[in-house]
Image (cartoon, rainbow, N blue to C red; front, side, top):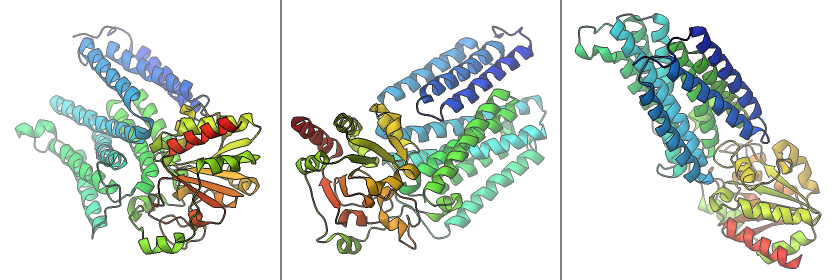
Length: 479
């Protein structure tokens, strides 16, 4: 079926792609600040809608009706996910989106090779970029599925190690690369075989890269998931960019490059925030279960002071400055709205309230920022690690809600271990520390937290949402 706008000159499509690219860049720029991030998302989505819609109308690939039907189905699924997925499950959803992007890139590159086989003309530049798209796309798809499974609890989130694992990974990487080189050098070697239309070496490459993607993420524990999510996001962008070269599609190259570059920058930031190298994340296996019951007893026995919402309210009643430090436990308990209400009440009573945000708190980059934004906490109240750390010594009360590793002072003193050298929030320097957790269990790293046993720390045991809401109610009654 002929395209609806098939008679338009190609320069018009190129111009539309240029406009879409500009919208992507502006959207990404707006996403650098929480205030303008919603607008940035809309601008970027508009750019993608323009590029996809115009491509469907101009190019004669399939029936526009069929293509638009596919777009409607995809849009409906996307809206349903956006509406139904809880904010606590957003990291898993991001991981799946990364995987879908990588998988789509691998399939599109393979489809282009099949089309080239039909014409009998293989171009070295296309086969080379297709091989690269296949490797990156397959690794991204399967690695993202494993990451999402770990985050969602359907796969054990501990580090899975085995003897000779690096050699096994290297073997599958070599196999994928060798299949790619074969594709470039002899793409139609099996031209007389009926299945050769499927370009066998490409699918061998995809299969090997798929296994490699699983093997790369399986050894990584929950503590490193924020870094993994950021890196896989970068991979999905690189896969899209290489597929853009396969298709000679400028808008795909621009969008993929932007995603790949921004994801890589974010990955580096995450690694620096954890005092980790990228190679160490992928091959070091942080997140192993290292909890030692005897060590925990030595740290905690006879040193834990419990408190109640009533006592916490009395402490807040004489405080001039309060810092709230959220963690993944706040996300699990869905306590962000109660926390936001508490902060608003304190602010109304002339208490200086700020939030200390660690870059890797939660299970994806910016997880705490998203939750607090959902609860309408003003962005001006959020302070990153470098800003808030110097102020803890002048803080009357710090309330830690569901955070563990990011406030563990042993990171500053340990010579080795999963969190040794990791920059943490030095909440122990405050006059009083209130830690709200369900139990004394360690964080993802499995390292006991000496903060819980400090003289100035009081443990508020219980569900985060219930404890914060009770504290809010008591505070309202007394003010």
